[in-house]
Image 1 (cartoon, each protein chain N blue to C red):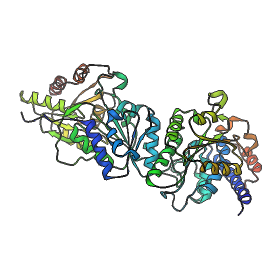
Image 2: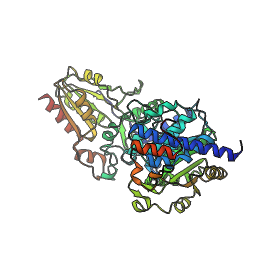
Image 3: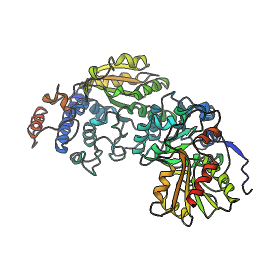
Image 4: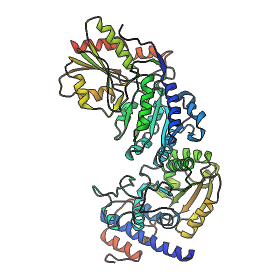
Length: 313
Length: 278
């Protein structure tokens, strides 16, 4: 096998540790929490920097606007909750912060279906769609622990509003340790010539497994990690797809308004066959484990293989 | 200058701001005269007496801040900023027109001196709290003033903020409620169940005062009292009259958002001691 996908990391833990590192390097970094710090892992920051940690309780609207006030006075606030609450409840507060292009970082933990047990109210499958619709917003979705660290650091350096999706569960490393993360630049994770997969988050790993399966059948699959979901550079997407026979998008998100929409629009007029693997316009539900839930919603290696074969037909 | 003379001067500034407000809305053919006129003394006392600010350096890090959370009253804010010297007074005629820096609701990235982009109601107290917390970490001792509407505090985020500001003992946060008693849809007592206002804020741990919001002396005194408090954020419930200064607008809530005719405009100017030519 060409890929040794053995090292597992917990992105929440990596996130919490990275915040602490950033806190040591830059005293402008402040952290806000809405009573989920034991899960989002901001408790690590709270322990080391209690004076720069603000627990607002269960009130995400207030959290975002307090963060905006801190940003207006030169701080770099990271505001935290589960993805679904971090984006849905304070939508208007985020929107106003984006009108002002404020330097706030909104971090959505337990993104996608990764909070498998808690069910539909806790699973964020439309967060990317609603954040994408807001002008001035930047959306980042790390694929693994390695990229989580780079992305959180890049978000802190970037001056403007950012939404970051953080996975809940341990996931295998798929991205390279070396190389700088650059906002807006998708990266080729695996070279291939027949079909290109655009994926983000944990779905990059699933896509790699699909590519390995198809390699045995003589189908060569390129994989692109679109860890910046906004802004999307159309020119880069088109050049990465050019020369292939078809395109598949894979995302842990509803098919509406996320990666599938962004890629299909970027490739308009190219005549390329496009298929999407995504949650098909429905809410999540509880499950006893993550993989079982992903399987129920069709986010599997088999589904990706099938989509690839479909665009090649 | 002694305080009495200062207050008299501020009262004249308030009168001029009222003239600016009706003129801007008349010229733009759009805007909210009633809620702009009720907030004039609060704005005047803040910008021309209370705030530590420098129009030549609008983003000075250790300045006092003012958030007009009831952003629809921005003609009052714009008039004050222009008269304070943040931008030419002639800019006021651009209100609401395409490419003007004077938007229909305040935009901090367009208008010099505006500290926050408001318009969507309810955000101001939280924003102000964030600013106070930032000042505390940085070691700046500025005050943050937030002016909200009375209908505005029906928004749930205001009470989330009230909890947090109390928890964080934000004694440099001074919230003024422009209590004109009438929101867009009618009297606040009929539209919502927000009254009584002061007991609610007191229950949240705030230092509360009620004043006549058209009495500049009372505004200044109340802010002095607020500043002497330690460990508690302050709320000043300013009893005001919607449309204050323009008699035909008082008691008629159609002036929440309405444009005067030429005749009404002249009538308003006359009531404010001005004429179309002067």
